[in-house]
Image 1 (cartoon, rainbow, N blue to C red):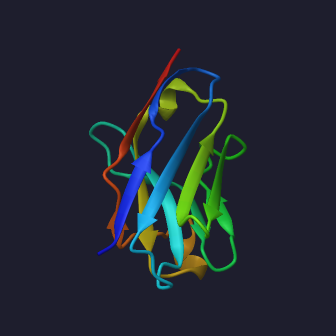
Image 2 (image 1 turned 90 degrees about the vertical axis):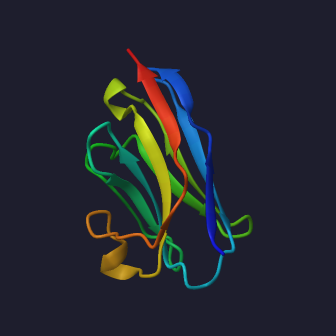
Image 3 (image 1 turned 90 degrees about the horizontal axis):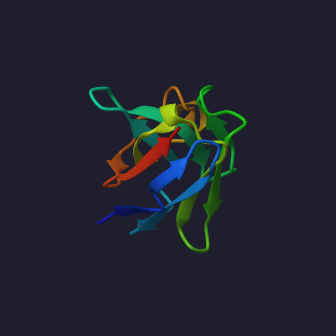
Length: 126
């Protein structure tokens, strides 16, 4: 059974940084794409960043480009999201996600995860 367990959320002032981590338990070679989504109250989840587990290719939503980075640690089976220069509009619940396909299906606007983590709250105050 695959489990994704997020950690690292919290509260920070605008301009600050947070690092989210996601431990992938039950990792198999079938997970070709890992990523992070966020969800604002009353809105659907939106992809923030994706990374291919096969070649490390990453993509980001326009709203976070230049501020967020995503990284993969294959030895530890974790995927992390480094968030810098945070803004109040980044306040949301953040979810780790895993999918079975890479290539175009690991692009940030096409990623449809197979499984999700439980989420971690990020709050940015002005």
